[in-house]
Length: 304
Image (cartoon, rainbow, N blue to C red; front, side, top):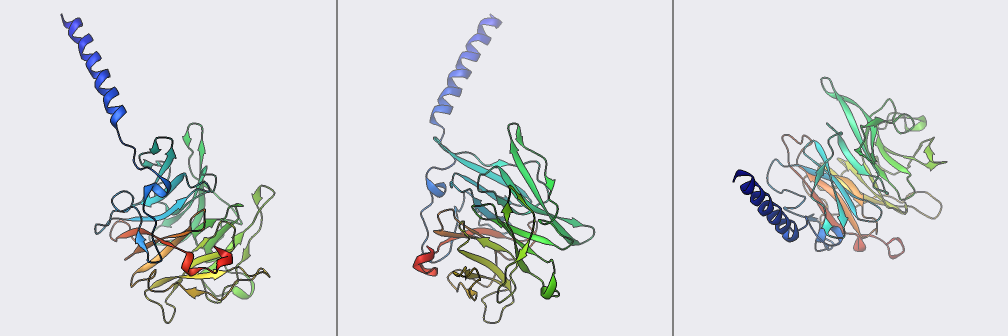
């Protein structure tokens, strides 16, 4: 009798499980997690799905892969990832091997996550750049990246172009830049590796950069610039035909607010800017949300 009951129990369980699987809805469906595209005024990205707009919740540094089918971001002190499949976007996966990170950035091929980790004894005095790679068994343990991707100075953020050139917000000093903090550096990807760095000459110091996939323009954060809208604002600079960068322009009040705008990332189709708006820097105490905005009105036609 007991064996017969067990058989019936498992039959019912399997049938019910099949029904649940057949009717379960995916995490999201459609391009950009099924969100209605924004206009020229910044909007919270995927509220209730990615961004939790309640106080003292923290979502930041949203990045899409080159094919726009993988999205990763920071929530609290962890990094999460979701991928677009034939059934829709997968449920959020927490990458367990990346504790205590800052500024995660997904590689174009979605097989690496770059981020910084700081020493916290007692205050963060130094950051280094790390990479976590995808393997057939999941995500590997983080590996510290040496020079030129890391230096004796703080490496605060990075952004990756389609050709794997890495743009770093760094406190490193060199030559006539000595004494100026917050310079953006580019580390070209040459011969399947990164061998040298060079500074990006801007007309005002930048803290962290979001590079366009084709490196035709860049959005970066600048601190306490006269005429700004908050503590840190986002600025746009264009790469000119001679390889230099145009005078940075504040992106204005439809993007910048009386908060901290940082962590810019450019979508793979160059249509949207993703960035973080926060009221402080500590994910345990402050609030942050991921925003996105259409770039069409902010870019000359030849750069779109």
